[in-house]
Image 1 (spheres, rainbow, N blue to C red):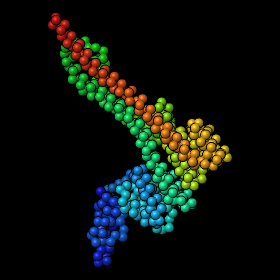
Image 2: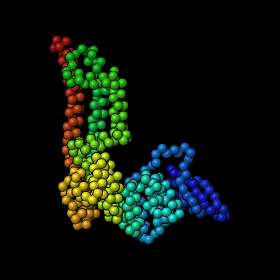
Image 3: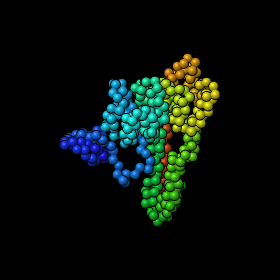
Image 4: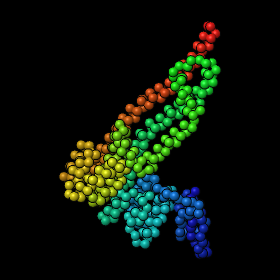
Length: 405
C-alpha cells in the first residue's frame, strides 16, 4: 500500500507533518479529515530502499480513463488544476499520480499543460503531447481529449486482439512440448531398466524416444544449456535493439502472422494521424509524430522517407504510395482525401478499414491454426503412446518366445 507524506493543520491551528498509508491520495485526505486535520499538502512518500531502476510506465487503460475524465471536467467548465486534483486523488496508477503531482506545481506557476505533460514521457506518448499543443492553440482541449481517449480505447482493443491471436499458438506449443518432456523425461525412463533386463528387441519408435529421453537423464546438461541458449536468444530478440530490429523485419515475412502485424501497424498509423489532424496539428509535424509512434522499424524507415518527400513538395499521397506499404483501397482513400480536403475523414475511414481487415485476418488465423495444432499435439502424443505400447508388446512377445509358447 502506498505511503503518503502530508502537512496539515490541527484543531489548535498548528501545522503538523507526518505520513499515512492509503490506496489513493483521496483516501489519505479523507483519513486526515476524519482525524480533525485539514491537509494542505499530500504527496507520495518513498523510502530510502525504494529504488527505481526504470521509471514506471502508465497503463494504457489508466491513461484512457484519465483522458476521458479530464475531458468531462473541462467540458463542465471546471479549472484544469481542480480537475487534476480530483483525478489524482482517486487514481491508483503510480506513474499517473506522480505526473499529476508534478504537473500541478508547474501549472500553478504559470506553465502550459502540454509542456508540463511533456516532462513525463513514461505517461504521455509523443502523439499525445503533439495533440495537446495543437489543442491549446485552437482552444479545443476538451474535444481533443475526447479524440485521444477514443483512440487509446481502440488501441487497447486492437492490441488485445493481436496479443490473443499470437499467444494462442505459443500456449498450445508450450503445452505440447511439456507433454513430450514429461513422457520422454519421466515416464519412459521408468521402463528403461525393464527393457534392458529382458533384453528384448525394441521397435524403432521406442528407440527414438529412449534416445531423446537420454537428454533428460544422462545428458541433462545438454538440455539445460540448450534451454539457457533458447532463453538468451528470446531475450536478445525482445530486449536488445539489434535483436528487436531483426525480429521486426523477419516477423513481416512469416506467413499469416506477417499480415496480422502489417494491418495492426497500418491501423495504428491511420488512427494516430487522423487524431492529430483532427486536433489541428500540421501534416508535417503530425506525420513525424505518427511515424515515431509506429513500432515496426521497416515502416518507420519508409515513412521517414515519405515525410522527407512531402517536405520537398511531393504532396501527401504519392510519397505514401511509393513506400508500397499501403494496399490499393487505402491509397485511393488518401488520394480522395487530399484532393477534396477531407484527409482527416478519409484517414478515419482507412483506420476502420484496417481494423476490420485485422479482425478478419485474426479470425482466419485462429480458425486455420486450431486444427493444425490439435493434429500436431495428437501426432506427438500418439507417437509417444505408440512407442510405449509397441515396446510392451515387444517385451511380452520376447517373453513368450523364451517360454516356448
